[in-house]
Figure 1: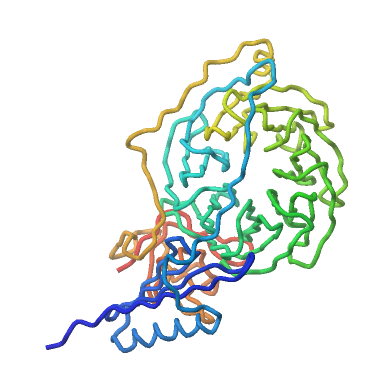
Figure 2 (figure 1 turned 90 degrees about the vertical axis):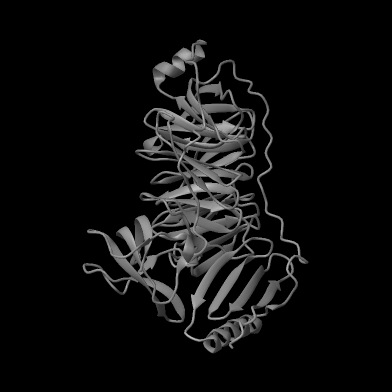
Length: 483
């Protein structure tokens, strides 16, 4: 009689001094199945499971994986003995507003936790908080869906119509479909402060004042350490990456070729915004400063009454908005003339975005606030007349989506529906990548795809693929395993 094979687990850690690596790697063999779990020490990590034809091949594959990690400096450890590194959460204070009048708030949604992430597009308003919750609402405040991520949301950014959330676990999640997934896994020594994505290239600024650039396949491209620490600003376009830190703003060539310019700002940079020809830096010395993208020259200064936590502009920079640490929101003409100052009525704005005569704020109270920024509404507010703000309630039956951490969590189909696209996991240059099987696509291009559910030879059905600059495809819609 054959006896059941014993389950064996090897747990390794790599922890370096200072800001170096601090991560684990665990390999478990259970008969024909090899399960690999990896990530930052103290985190749940990502899981990959592979089934082999024989137990001998499973043990050999596991031994190879362990050997590769040992050669890179990993060593056997006891899980739980080494503490996780602390994650930096932005420490902010919020005083009552000194403005004489309150902004005309149309509606307010309380997320339940301090919120930094915001994005507003043609159809949706997105807000992400430090509990890992991301909510979508329509422009009138109706709740549409909730995404439940494993850790606190630092920021939300968009690249075309793909939405990404940068989280405290070091991962950046694609929220563009019902199956959110970790599209980028930032190195374990990077404490994310802010991020931006431009044509599939991820730009990450961190606590140590570094700028890390990663491509669509989660592969490191280049990194630079700026002159200052606490880099709360990063913006990117075709001509440069703009990095804001406690010593000012530094522009780097997009290919990592070097520094283009550096400008010392009036105070530490706490937030950044960009238009086609200028970047805007909100600082701890109560100003927003507009810098030329071409030269770094300061073109205008917008003066507030307290440290600036956030800023934004109307299209083309016609109006400049700012939120300060004293729960006030400001509007300036493009030349720096202050047009108005009003209280938010609900904490200091940590992020903001203007769209179609409305100003959307996320606040220290964890609320997404919609302000009517039209001239008539602001004039009425200055005279003491504001609408009754509608409080949006959390719906009990709200659809909730969470990232898949294993293949078993993905729904299956036995054949591809009409119009769907089939992709396949293949070994390519030593890495497990995803290529397109369906006709009409470039089979040599990679597909940005959840790493946690990749298996050699596995096929998946997706609703649609869209080409992106740089020669890769992005997934649009649902992901299902093809049996």
